[in-house]
Length: 304
Image (cartoon, rainbow, N blue to C red; front, top):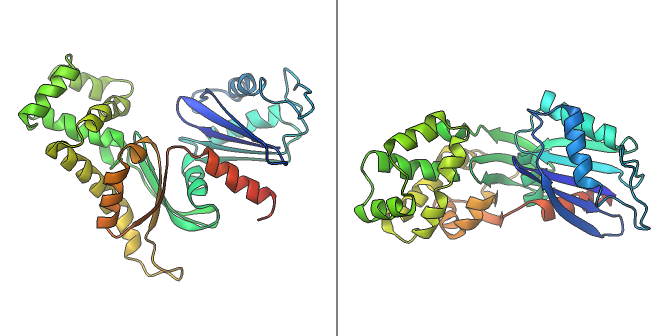
């Protein structure tokens, strides 16, 4: 059996894949390796997996250590996972829970997105959610990654970037009167002091800013909002991907881009227009990566 985890900041989507092709996918609470010890991470994982981890004949896993011989391979893809202590904590937690697993791998969400989008092929893998991220991918591995920069220095095309553009214009009095009126109507508490407090003193400023994408989606046909979306996506391509078009490569032109994330899916038509304008072909836009990872690792297990 293969165990695959797609871990975000608040939740984990788990997939169990049996050798006969049967699959089971379910959600659990997240486990941030930056803030938790290996023991606490193992507890979170165990609580999430015990209701589902049993063999096809119905035998239940041990309640302290999951001693199922069926779990042979584990692949964990997590937001913010980088080489070093966070990745090592996750690895240690899995080794405790699955001492008989032959293979355990811990990777970034960027690699997970790339494998889900392109399998063993080649292309530009992009994440557009609250923030944004992208990398050149080939044959199962990241070849080159572009630094995200976060919502202050980057994250172009992400929800926080769009929200920042909207709120920055509100602060400066640059919103069209109709949009400003509707924004105040939908967010009656919004004013300059509250914005400054949320952005500069709040615990999750990027999440606060990305929250305005609901408003942006609602008014996407308005000329001002439509231009805002286009400018955010254009900035993403110009500051992150266009560099790959300019290179000579033995593999040919690097113009194929795939996308994962809620913002990419919600604003799909605008994203495709911006991609085409900058010379890129969009191969796929996924809301999640579990199905793609199941397909990728099933082929890997079967030697395809």
